[in-house]
Structures are given as C-alpha cells and as structure tokens.
Image 1 (cartoon, rainbow, N blue to C red):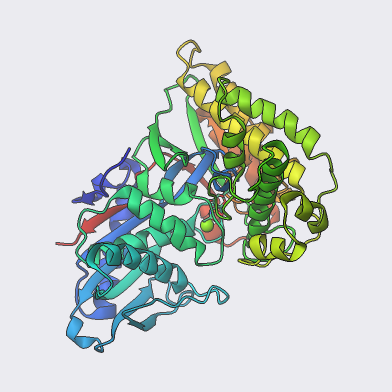
Image 2: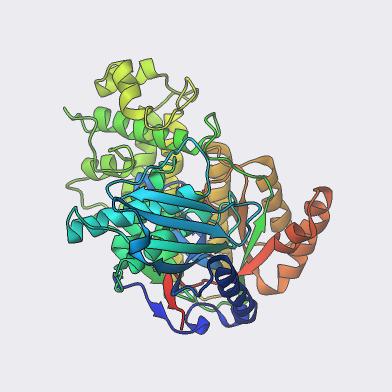
Amino acid sequence: MAGIVPVAKSLKDIYTEDAISTQTGRWEKLLKQFNSNYGHSPQFVSRSPGRVNIIGEHIDYSLYSVLPMAITADVLLAVAVTDDAQAAPSSYKIKVSNVQSSKFPSHEFDIPYDSVEIDAKVHEWTNYFKSGLRGALELLRKKHGSGFKPKSMEILMDGTVPAGGGLSSSAAFVSASALAVMFANGETSVDKTQLTELAIVSERAVGVNSGGMDQSASVFSLRGSALFVSFVPSLTATPVHFPKTSPELSFVIAQSFVQSDKYVTGPVCYNLRVVECSLAAAYLHAVLNKTSDPLHADSGPLGISLRGFHDTYFKSTTKSFEDQLTELITLTKSTLAKEEGYTREDIAPIIGLSVEDLNKRFTSTFPIRGTHFKLRQRALHVFSEALRVLQFMSVLSSTDIEHNESFNKKLGDLMNETQDSCSNVYECSCPELDRLCAIARKAGSYGSRLTGAGWGGCSVHLVPADKVEAVKSAWEKEYYASRELSAEQREAAVVVSRPGSGSAVFIVE
Ligand code: NG1
Ligand code: MG
C-alpha cells in the first residue's frame, strides 16, 4: 500500500466521529496558542498518531511481520515557515515550543546548513524534532543537491500520546517532525514509504536501535483498519479489517503507570534485546548455514537479523512459512541449548570474531551491560511470536470460521500466549503488566497482553463489548485504587480504542 500522505481539509478527514468534538477544542487551542507565542497564525499542522500493537511484539527488529493499529492520541505540530532573510547566511532558525511549556521548555536553534547536531546522551525533548529534521534534510539533499538550504520554521507542539507508555509517542513525534520539515520545504506530496523509512532511521539517532513497526503504523494507518506491516523484501503495509463478530469485540488499552525507560542500560534494556537477537542470528547463521560470512544475513539494526538467517536457511524450500518457523523452533532448542545464556567468550569463536571485535560490532553503538546473553530464549520468543502473528492473520481471514465466541477466543488465546512468552521467555513484562492482564482475563477479556516495548507502559485487551465495564471496574478495584494517581491519570488510565488514521497535513486557512 504505497501512497502519498493526505492533505486533510477537515478534522473529519482525520478523526473518528466520536473524537471530533474533543479534538475540535484541542485544535482551536493549539492555533490560538501559536498566535500568542509567535504573533501570527501557523500555515499548516502536521499530524502523526501513536499506535497500539495488537500482536507481534519485539520481532520487528528481527524483520518479522507485525500487526499494530493507529490510535486517536497523536502529535500535532503547528508550523509557520518564516522569512529566510532573518537567518544568518550560514544557518537557519528553528523555534520549537510545546503547549505543555512547563514540562517541555521552548528552544531556539540556529542550525548550520550542513549538519544537524543531536546529543543522544542528553534526554532533551527537542531531540526527536531534530532527528526528524535531520532525516528529512537528508532526503531533500538527495533530491535537490548538497547545497540545499532549509527554511526557518516556528513550531508549536501538542502531543497526547503518553511518553514512555508503550504507545509510541517517540515515533509519532519523529514522523510528524519529518513530515513538517518536508512540507515546510516545499514537498507537498510526501511519499508514505519514504517518510516511514526516514523516520525509522532518524529515530535510531536518538538512542534506540528500534525496528520499524511504530513509524509504519503512525504513517500508513487508515481509519477503521489495523495494519499488517512486513519488512522483507521491502517495507509494505496492508490494511487489515476486523470482521464484525458476535459478541462484538473492543480493544481496550490500560496503562500500568510504570514508566519504562528504554535508555537505561541494564538487564531490562531494549537495546540489549536487539543485541541478543542479532547475536542469536549470527550464531545460528554460523552454525546452521555453515557460512564463511557469519556476520551478514540481511539487514536489521545491527546488520544481521533472525529473519536473514531464516531466509538463508530455507533458501530453496517448498515448506510453508509456518512450517519453517516451527522447524526453526526445534532447531533453536538443539543448537542454542544453554538456558543460562552465552558469554562473549562463548559466542566470539563461533561467529569468527575476537571478543574485542564482537564488542565493537554488537555492543558499541549503544552501551550494553551484562555478561550473559540469552540467545536461546530470545530466538525462541521471536520465532514463536512470528508464528503467532501468522496464525492470528489466518484466523482473521479464514472464511470457514464463524465470527462467534470461538473465533474471538482463538484471537484472544494467541494474545495470551504472546503475553506468556513476553513475560517468561523474552522477559520484557513486569509484575504490574502481568497483574493487569490477569485481572482483565478474570473479568472476561479474551486476550490480554503488554503492548509496545514492555517493562511498564500499556497493555492491550480484546474484550467483548458487553464486558468492557466489568473489566474496567475490576482494574479500578484491584489495580488502580492502590496506586497514587492524579485525577488526570485516572481519567486517562483506560481507553477503548478504535483503529485511527495515520499521518496527515492540515492546511490552516
Ligand atoms: P515502543 O517502546 O512501544 O515505542 C518499541 C519499538 C518498536 C518495537 C516495540 C516492541 C521504538 C521506537 N519502538 O516500541 O519498534 O520493537 O518496542 O515490539 O523503539
Ligand atoms: Mg517509542
């Protein structure tokens, strides 16, 4: 599903009907605040949403397909392109402010024409804008030549995706930023694939070796549909419709209010999982593909991925993809037998590197702590989760299953299996997320699991519409009541979400 980022004329082009009235008030406030900050109106608003992942957790950076959907919560950037003459001859000016100005202070940057500096070690909210800026400028330079001079911009942001909550505020911010920069610099037809690809690469500049699920969901989603995203052989995004079922289904998102911090180096680190998966790929590739070049199997953030190993292994097979994954699960159990994990000294000789070179190649981009890498468990999660995504898709598209209770249960069971695997094998859950899932299932949810990176943040639940209230009140009593939450947090704790639309630009008249 290729295409161009839509230019919206009315909020009805962007939001579902039930969201319009709240959004209208919010947009009016944004435009008014822009006027008071900068003394004139913005010319356009660039918009990109957060997402919830339905199934396919921690497998995008191993290049397996995932099934997220966009949510209503989003990042809005109101933008005015300002007079170039104001800028110094060798630089342009970017003014960025946020409607939540006490939490996110305003900044003014004079940025030299030739490069955008980002210090990933300093956690500054504007880094996300800069990373989108840098990515967009690379693309613009490719198109217009290295002498391309970006326009100065004034920006006001309003973001409603909670930060660190597993709903992908970062990808929404980076995608909206890149889109704003492209549009401000005269690109009125922005290609969705290009925008997504540049947002993926840009976000890695801010300190996380992420996969591409969030940016794809944020850019490509269409209202009313989830999105099946594949990365091999190239990025494709296909809308997926959920049939009407009886009992009817709702997606409910519940916050754990445990803030995950992907940047902390330690056992609970996202980047560590990326390293473990890449090392598992290199190991399996070396042993099972008996290759003389064990360090290159397709791409992935570190140049080698489990999917790359997989495709090489089954280069000339007639087996179905599902059967391939099942076989890989068996092979992983015998090839990566050590439950306690592998040390650098275990891995290096197998993949033909010295320990020093292993560190250089795999653990130097982002610092990683830890002596044991759980290659077996990480690979087993990835292969089994990739299989669950396909099983979920085949339940959805099957024409011989009636859309009744048993259909709903099949989908729910797969989500529950994902949670078990995330909790016990991939170790990316936390006690609070496990509790939210257990409470929901007891109160009638078909399937409950963490969504996004985990270690805190949000959970997603497939709940029959007539049990949503029961599930909510169970959480209220058994989870939220015992936590110290502000009225605002209580209000935002649980959201029933419909699939929303992706990135758009709105022209301010
Ligand atoms: P969150 O932390 O929810 O934005 C992260 C990654 C995804 C994916 C999920 C786990 C980033 C930007 N996103 O999502 O690519 O790997 O974890 O499935 O790091
Ligand atoms: Mg994120």
